[in-house]
Length: 241
Image (cartoon, rainbow, N blue to C red; front, top):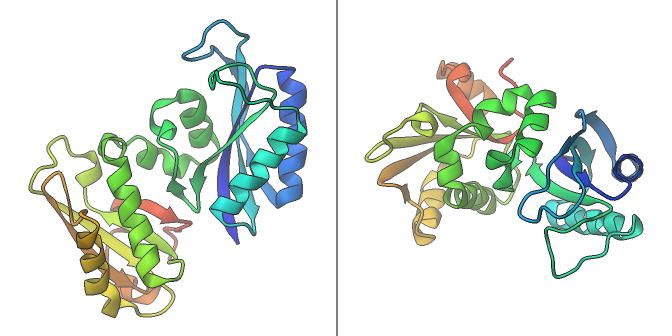
């Protein structure tokens, strides 16, 4: 099973269309949580009505690309017409902003009508989506996470960052300490992952070296790592180990 946070917005019969979108999303899987929805002023193109925005947290069987296509079908069903003006009025807008705990849309960091509803329903994600270093290096970090999953050829339980790199003002010549939590021992994949990241040109970020270690939950417990000081980059990781 997978989970996703879906950002929803409408400024054409907004309350009605958000309610219809909620019903459609519930039919895709299990609706776990829904944020409060509120009206916001339009961005980039101001000559239109205010938008009604919020987020849904759902559990689904679909992978990200398949879910994206499902959302497009819902938009079409609810009468969305795409025009040259990408910022114009719409009956409904549905975007995947987090997938399996991973930020997949950079707007999460900068747009309060997405960020604040996420913090409301998933407050444990506040440190992640408040990290300026994550925001500034979003594409590289996303590539690192995707690269780890690609090499493992399976979904890890979680990908964590240990330490303060994501919150430090000065990031040059620092260590980005990444822990991959797996069901079975996969430490033998360490060099393969590092070599793969190097081939992609992301063995460093802003002169900060990347360290990768792979642990099972029991191995992580034996390391006596302070979980409260980790940042979850991927997965539904519980600190109650």
